[in-house]
Length: 166
Image (cartoon, rainbow, N blue to C red):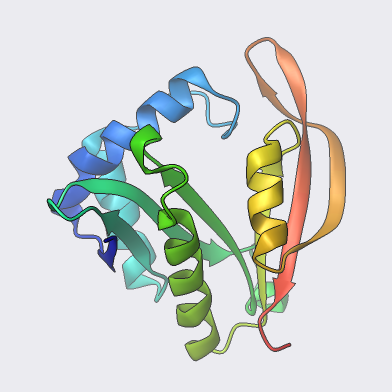
């Protein structure tokens, strides 16, 4: 059984163990450099201080298997109700339902906070994530050609979104 809980800055090492291989080996994120534990701890604190969650999934043994968070889609007051999420899983957690639990928890939090939209920016080649989002009610709202640069080439970005008030 997977448990979802709020992250603490002390969880930064567990998050780094998931996030840094994804940064280093994939184009799932366009972030170019691995993140330090102190940087991740700051991200956790900053998200939570701004009223946005930073959640973890854990397996039955208590091992962190994934994380998810959201923040405002773009800066400025006009976007205050539009959120963008990120979810990343350890390889052993893929296909276990942990991502769906994380995303559902993020959506629930966003609804309670009064947000209207949840948006995911997905590398176009990440067909698994695109199908996952579609299964959870997300629609493709846009495609930005050559939006990200990683591993010596450009990657398209797919924007998938969901109206949380529907």
